[in-house]
Image 1 (cartoon, rainbow, N blue to C red):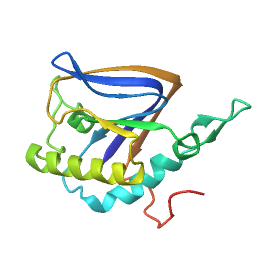
Image 2 (cartoon, rainbow, N blue to C red):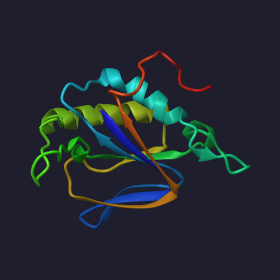
Image 3 (cartoon, one colour):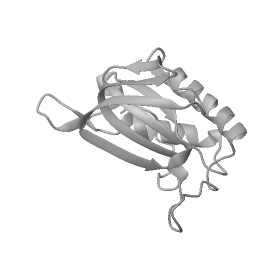
Image 4 (cartoon, rainbow, N blue to C red):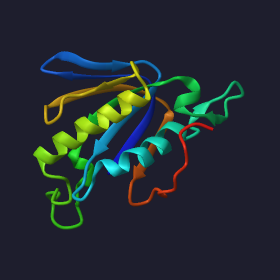
Length: 158
């Protein structure tokens, strides 16, 4: 599982000209699902993204987490996070999870997020052509890959 998160002042996603998800301050979260991913990754990835201290405190230092600032999340599925562009000029996406399995896993991930942050999770539409608009705050952009995140049982929160 790969997450590309961007700290935003606001973000929205449109499908066919209609806004389907919109947030204020928080995280725009691009979600890539790879072959072999499962719901077992959700608690670890949620703990990491919820507790990363990437929001500014009153002194302008990045000391606060998404939970601390009560931020929102806009999650957008993005299989292209598994692009392999090492050969040729056309990226390969063979490491991405197959679409039907990815649809189900993305829906389950959204359920996990919504249970953790009721009323503060928005999303795009899986497999739709989406237009994502954001105002990156900082800019702050962080890459999380489940292969690189320690799998210890740290509870969410401090």
